[in-house]
Length: 339
Image 1 (tube, rainbow, N blue to C red):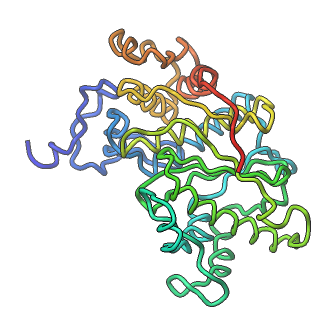
Image 2: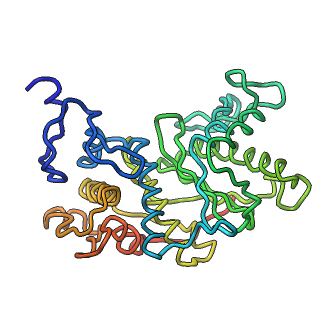
Image 3: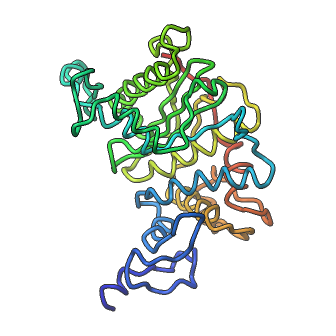
């Protein structure tokens, strides 16, 4: 085979066997909403050891919300009183994450796998010629901007990439309860603390923008950080898979009117190789509107991943129903810890 054929999709996993070898990994295969699923994404679906791309992550969470709304299961986006608001990952990046700089003293005080970062000092410090305030103001143009204090009863969620182009995490902010969390599948102390520093600054910026600096809601110092202890990855490439499960979980719980404290309870799921393959198949089914799935896993795979439930046979929107009704209720939970 020539180089183009060698880069083509290997259909042995039987996910989409009708797709032939492609000229390149960026050859388009399927249109999913505004996103194009290419050969490279198809490879990510059929294996468990590849990092999920931006195209998969963004489209997956949007599709989950769209199907839930279409089926009448979610009513989360009421313009007057939404329950869930999605902050663009690029917005959080430009607003605060890119202004994180290494905290040499903090890193020396404790042994950490990842370096600890702090926010740059205002008002003089800049990154790439942009001040922190300028970065925050610019970030508003990157999404259908809603201030977190404008909808204090809503969960503001964002799937972020930090460090840039290396790792997926999920953050959640809830103004009424003055709480926020960071879910890091690596569970790395320095990394989570760095994000905490950035989110507290974001909260303060939002408060200033709303004129709430002197109110009880305004100062991030008065907010509670919820330590989100959940399933950790044992590899370097399945952060995206676990973050999507975490996102599907919290949205499903919010839609079921779950009490606030229970939403951030600890949870875990199977992380065996067959389990990851099953999760990725169902993400693919979600993105491509698969209506029925006869067999999710072989018997051998099912025995190896006994904790992974099978999708319901004959369900419409199989991928959505797998995560919302089959997997999420099976996740084990315990009470959370506050810091």
